Length: 164
Image 1 (cartoon, rainbow, N blue to C red):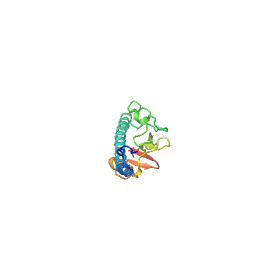
Image 2: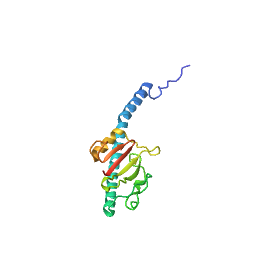
Image 3: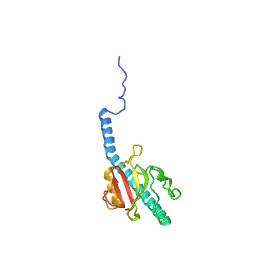
Image 4: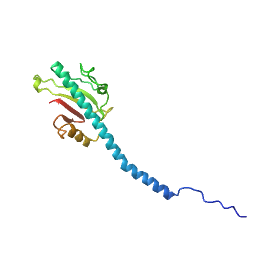
């Protein structure tokens, strides 16, 4: 007895599937680093913007009061007299990770005091950007050397000096 003719089922061969998966993998390998760079550039731009705004707010406070606000030991807490001046973003992690903390040193001679925004790395809010990109941030807003100038790396933390 002859079986009726049935055409071959339509479908993909194993080779065709392997080629398709390989192409998707290559495209992903090309696009993921570009996406990460783009994401980091956005975070860096947001951080630079935030630091400039905070600097203006602290400088305005200093002009109004003759001194900067006192240091705050806890992260994400407004310095005294700054809550009404600053956005709520101060209390949240920075765009690159870490949390903000205000430091105004207490040397007896006010001319020797430093005032800076400390971006504190922690287990809960790690600074989540490639250390090499920190030089890019420094190059945009300072001298390109993260060991000197207004933006400095201090251990795992960043310091943005308003007054050196």
